[in-house]
Image (cartoon, rainbow, N blue to C red; front, top):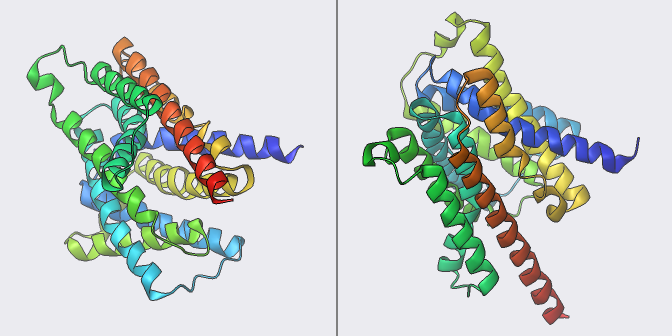
Length: 299
């Protein structure tokens, strides 16, 4: 089989895995508090990533500066996951899977533009406007105040606002591999969460198969596998091709939420998601064009 086809297949599976995590997270919130779920998610993920490092023969030794960046990133990742689990607990997994995944890159673009005083061109303004329109549809602002600012929506908004900070901090790291950085970030997240809270680790052993299936899906399938495959395919195919598969994440989140949670698929969520995805594509395309121009100017 052609290697490109294999990479495409793996990338599609990774995107589907990310979309499914919203459903597993919703199910798991019925078993444990978000603090415990954060620990178990990244504790299991760390062992999965360790296996990946061994498989790819990546040396785990790194300098102190890079480890400090990973530690700082892990604290932001912990905060993001707190909002992630609370959002799925009080809100709809389908909404979170569409709203957060489409707003993350849009908010990231805005934050970078503000922090680094980057001039926004007409194309990027169009992308931001479309993203704003998408958010209006997804939040259904024509509804009552209590519905718009429900607990679930607030936590999902906080998650979308937290992710850009993680993206910027992670961009500062210069480890030998993005997979290695992910390993340390996941490891520090689980350890930090363990020391921050007082809970019994044996609580999980009383739960049924449904819990274990979903915690393993969330940790090994949705985090270890998806993260590894994404970084691996980016290295082989480039970020331009890898990012073009992004639309699969919100689509799979909606489909899985309907199948396993019987959540409604609203027209406003679909329309808002489409606007959001178009906005993300425009902003990504514009960013690539900027990078190309900067590269040409340096020659």
